[in-house]
View 1 (tube, rainbow, N blue to C red):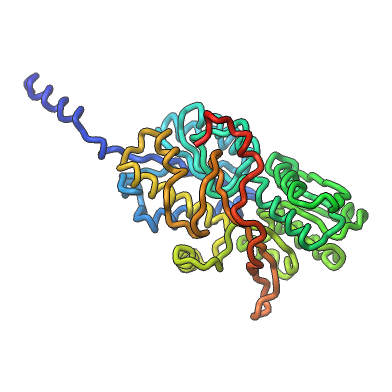
View 2 (cartoon, one colour):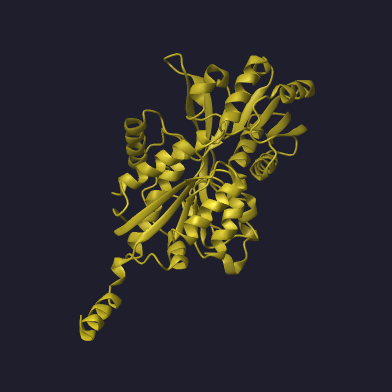
Amino acid sequence: MKLRTLLAIAVIGAATPASAQELRIGFLNTLSGGLAALGRPQLNGWHLGLEHEGWKKNGDKLGGVPTTIFEADDQAKPDVGVAAAQKFIQQDKVQLIVGIVPSNVLVPVFKIAMDAKVGIIGTNAGTSLIAGASCNPLFISTSWQGDQPAEAVGKMITQDKIKTIVLLAPNYQGGKDLISGVKRGMADDVKILDTILFKLGNSDFQAEISKVRADRPEAIFVFAPGAMGVSFVKQWHAAGANREIKLYSAHTIDWVTLPAIGDAGIGAKEAIQWLPDLKNPVNEKFVKDYIAKFGSTPSNFAEQSYEAARLIAATVKGANGNVNDVPALMKNMRRASFPSARGPFKYNVNGFPIQSFYKSEVVKGTDGKPTIVNGGVIVADARDSYWQECPANMRH
């Protein structure tokens, strides 16, 4: 081949338009161990959101741009999550990392991604460690800052005129955030008799339940996500503690865990940003299609990752396909209008939603089976408690 021909081919290649860009996303999720009960609906919601935006396989367009998606299981282990994130960034060349169930995985992955100028869309974990002084404009959440649901539970505890309480959570950053949140939400006249931190992944709660009963509180607050929640609530009921002490919780009894918990959960109250019966067309389609596709009622974990897919698509459309300018993409993401199942909400300067929280209560349904009902708004347009600590140069 002549040199002139080779040069012509090189010029044509160099002139490839920006529209030929490819969006590359790493979805990091927990599909092994006790927290897989949260990870599976996260994966389902993510896939349904992608499908609603027209993406079904690698090479399909998301927001008008050909998109390749890589998926990994972090096993709820920081070292495994870090290795997966490094592969996403170094080998797969992703612009975005989406997902992450536990805070102990989010924190190290957050640092790696921020250093590499890769965006993170968190669909669950929202630790206080990245909400305040360490906030970064390359991060955004479709769930909540970790303290927020517990703060709403604290307000509900106050509204219910509870006077004495014991607080329980696993001994890691996410658990500590929720303990801080419920304390912040409760009125000063609610007396905390004890705070019990148990091992993450614990399945035998007899010692904790015995200690609570010895304290004789009017109520407890417990954060026990995934399999931990199933074990705790069933053992709580079996011990008869539910007849003496009211149960308030966060991320413990939901549409994922309720089938396994059964009647043991009746009477328990939570606070959450989304419930299946919210009345808006996007949510009604989401719930209907989720049930048809996966055979179960979606949980908030599914909704949170569903939102991520739709938020990304809307942002990419607004960027006219320019997905390689990650800082600009993430900045625009905080302002994007997208079809949310929880209804319209805004973003705060640290990337966490400003949103309402609803009372969620387990009752016996008309068919005799336990169900979760919406008890109305506890707090409207709630901001997290750390946003003011976010430095001015990191706000968007």
